[in-house]
Image 1: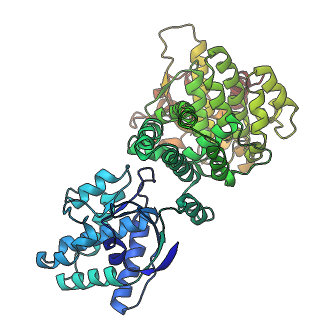
Image 2: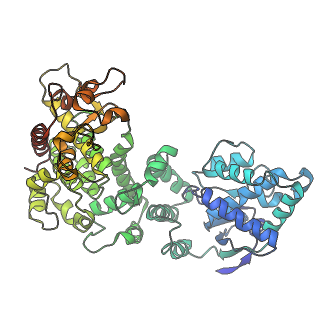
Image 3: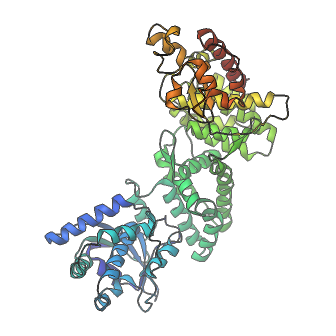
Amino acid sequence: MEARENNFKSIVTNENRLDIPFFQRHYTWNEEHWERLFDDLYDSFINNTTHFVGSVILKRNGGNDNFAIVIDGQQRLTTFSILLKVLYDKIDENKRKHFENCLFETYKDDSPKINHSKIDREKYTSLFNNEIDTNAKEGIFGCYNYFNTRTESKSNDELFEFMKFICETKIFVLVTLNANEDEQKIFDSINSTGAPLNASDIIKNALFDKAIKINNEEWALKIYEKYWESVFEKDDEMRKFWITKIGKDARTRSENLLHSFALIKGFFDSQKDKLSELSLIYKTHISSLENKEDLESFLNEIKVYVNIYSEFLKITKQTFYKFDDFKSRLFHILNISDIMVFIPVVLYIFKTKDLHKQEQMCKVIETLVMRFYITHKATNGFNKLLSEMLKKAGNKDSLIDFINNHNSFRLPSNNEMCNKLKTLWDNGDNKRANLILFWIELFRRSKEQNTKDIVELADVYSLEHLMPQSWEENWHQYANNDDEADELIYQIGNMTILKGSLNSSLKNKDWETKLNGDGKLKNCIKRSADLIVNKELLDKKAWNKDEIEKRTKILSDNFLEIWSIK
């Protein structure tokens, strides 16, 4: 291994091309990174100083074809090359010849010097062929557009001098590996403490590095496309879904999935292993896969669970739910609550083909989530119990016994739930109350005998306090002070869901006006009377303490009927 200061021109012209392995992650830098890089480079140019950009690690090819593999630094190399392409496009045509070997592959004028990873190769190549989405704000094209804007006001001569400066100044540290050195060890050492890559990226790199070593790159690419790209990286929507951070510990969905899979398979022990060690634990397991069949089987199993988890991808504002669809109901509640600690158990449950067993187990998990979510009780400590919990997840009674007898769970009791439903005070409780009322509405519809009633609803409703939070003007007869008012306003019985928010001038009106409208404004409670939770309000001549408490009792009974472990 050799490390030394170097400039961009030397790094790229010493090779015919630079290859970014097909399995490396997509281009992730954004405007914050672009701005910092451009400002630092331009300030150094104006002041004639040196700015250190970062390190680049290359592994030279051992054959006759003169190319190097980019082990680390693909984000900064990509960004730097795009900046140079912007400058190249703006300078006089007769000056471009000085930089062609920095941007284009030797002997191939139309191929970029950097052969990009599979995800970004098409866009990156299109950019160098001057096929650019000029409206893009993100990714490869967004980077080009940003630098294009930043350089608009600068003269041709200044851009030429700037381009010379950043090409020839030693602003990189180049680390070069020989063909026989293990790049994965180097890669691990530079990424194990920092955060250029998340656990999913490191695991993916380890998997397909192993595939190349077991067989060859052609086979590795084939199984990558079949088992990884098709489910994690098929399009931009899917990529964004998997890199979205969720849960209290803000891990990406892909990390959450891979952690769940490791728990289910048993090579991650929640009692002793740490989430921060997930990639290391995976790499240890991957090293034990000795042949093509073992590795492909392992990837196929991951794909099975990815497809189950991908049901979350189908949840949108347009999704229609019905109470008896227990799978969609659970996914919706998990999505709203953002309580993802039980995902390993959920995936394990849905792996079974027994629908009756799925429904039984989902009811248990859903009750756990709702009771902890509504009462704000912390669930972070449950991570350590997951391995043990998974052993019980194949049988409803065993799982219930585990929950009831494990002190760490202490499932909120019925009394605690009823008390909480009388005191939904916090800002986040509007979201919780909306969730409760939405599913109670669907629960009641599922009980209706009238088949004409629509049993499916989309979650498009807004929460309304019947006795308003600003109560003093039109509701003063029901309370003597703020404390008395709050005891009524924040009960679940004083809340409902409407098709659209009431006009601000109507929200605080008296009961008769809020219920029936004033003849001018479009919305009122009566306009959402197709909802069962609102039909029961239509004959109320007054809305007072007795009515609120009576409705709170009814809704609390509904809650306990839906979300109890029996």
